[in-house]
Length: 456
Ligand code: GLU
Image (tube, rainbow, N blue to C red; front, side, top):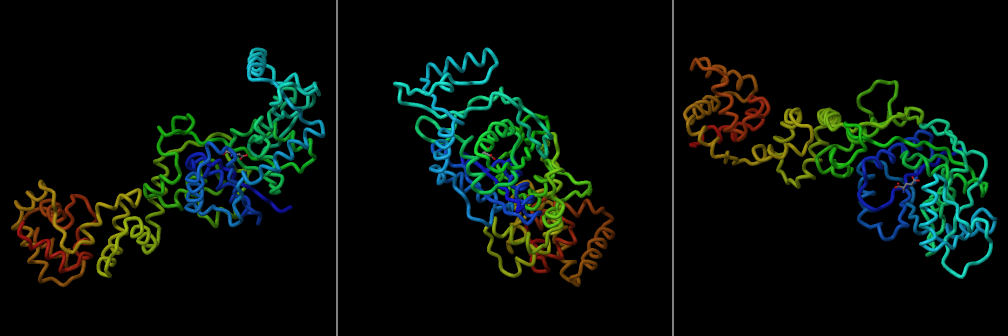
């Protein structure tokens, strides 16, 4: 059997990190089995669906590298076939027209809530036509027996059919509901495995009735627990960003995000911290999806991201930075930035935090502008210039630069802390930065000496 999975987001907002994780699971499962992974945009709710949201879904999936290579399916294009199935169910006696007016429906709802019984319209057993021409089509849920789903994550769960509502499959304006459209499309697309959030687990027991009535092939299910915040409540904005692309904007790498989202809810016995794409494709199994909700912990993501940044090829991270900050550099500036990047990356979680370092690295004529720091430079101008003079005559290697600084400290009987911070400010305008010798060396003789021989 060729495995076919799908990610079926509704384009009503941004791509939530929970949705992104669902996409990753669907993608990996299909890839692992040489199957097909499809993306279906569930855009039937025209009032709430927007083009921006569709773009956001594509941008997010592309960033993570889990977009489908197949044609994207737009559910709204299939509406006719959904309506056709609603009428087929009606004709075969598995559904009925319900002519309740809003008042009657309200009454029925209240009654069923009060008595804890499912909604079954009196029109279920009434084949006549009402004066009221407006009707919805409801599914005639079986009254006996049980429905059992053997879910990869939730396990084997049985539900008595008598508790199922006669759900609406076609609204009075002749538009199909999600409960119908989703099943019809899954069938048409040949979906073999439905991997989605466990907020849809209840729906599965109802949707499966349509599949049973029409004798369609039953898909297998994996309903994944939702992502929670560190306090154990359902993840919301107060726990941090829930929009996937915000993480891109904040400077997380897609590799780190992919790895972390996968770890949120999936573990292997292979105790690896980082889930590298190609390795994970081989290992992925639905059985390893965790049964309890995962907790989104930004500290863990930061650790992973920082590890990725430090292991990344300098050319790749350089490219990311240049694109993000739209920097246009000459070969000298490029060399300086590239050579200092490994040191700089040790100090940040996200590469966007490097933005304060670009100026002193890139600008040939950089000068510290902060007034308080300038005051310090003025007070120590003599020392700065003396060190500049010493360096002027030294061979430009890290060893000799180091030796020069040490000799100066020794001769003056002072400590490194009397020199280091001031020189650092003169060169970078900052009080914390990578190792001083590396900075002097990588900035090069001309630039370093300009900044050290300056009259502050
Ligand atoms: N469109 C639904 C949602 O965004 C998903 C439906 C499904 O996976 O069956 O929640």
